[in-house]
Length: 343
Ligand SMILES: [Zn+2]
Image (cartoon, rainbow, N blue to C red; front, side, top):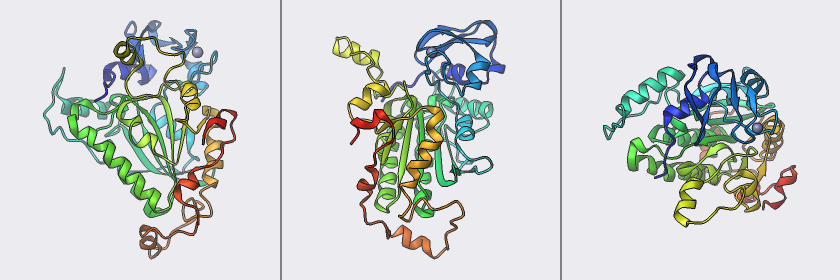
């Protein structure tokens, strides 16, 4: 099982700046960085320049010096991506169980309750209906501020449910990931979510549905190794750390130096693991264009495309009007220079 970053440190990275206490150590991702007192300034983990926190927020959490894309909290992602007023959250009431009675510093059940109270949401995955530039979608966003965006039973279940909803309602599924991997507090049960989520996405694909995953910084462990990598289109934000085990673990195991840029999105696109790099400011128009590829099939209808109830069983049985196979439909060329190496 992959190692999940310490949720405390994770929380420090993404928590509301107004709640920060002066002098607290802040770790940006996996490296130790000391924040300036008061939390007004922070250091870019990529270029090390000091950034005024308000300036960073105004720039959509993109470094003004080097364009490094900082992790975006889940709710902020939803807000920045969807058309205003189109968001309708679903499956928000599903909560986790501490089946193993797991305790580290505090009992897992207590940790879940505290995190849920602090963030005002029950789990790390946020799902709902919405529209992107007028195209109706099912959106699922992994929130790194909730226990490192780790995947336990609830995250797996909600992702599978979101995929099923996309299938039944004939909407494309858009997923955003930022995760430390499987949730160690749930043991093998968290690993089982890898098979479940992939199975749900396969059912969506078999029914002619379309899925797009945008991997954001950082996407690691069991999330990379399951649903994030099997969507029809796999995109990433620039500079995102994407991998299974962390680079330090790999370097220590192999006992050799890793190539420059190892496990970064720019490195991985050359290896064919990603279909495209899309900067945060370009995401909405890019997703809008990609979602248009889904038109002509029974998925990706207009926002006003209300399904008649009797159409649903037909959709569930896999009937579609698009003659292309799901894999063929996934093979589209992205209008970004970096996508030339994709298939
Ligand atoms: Zn920077």
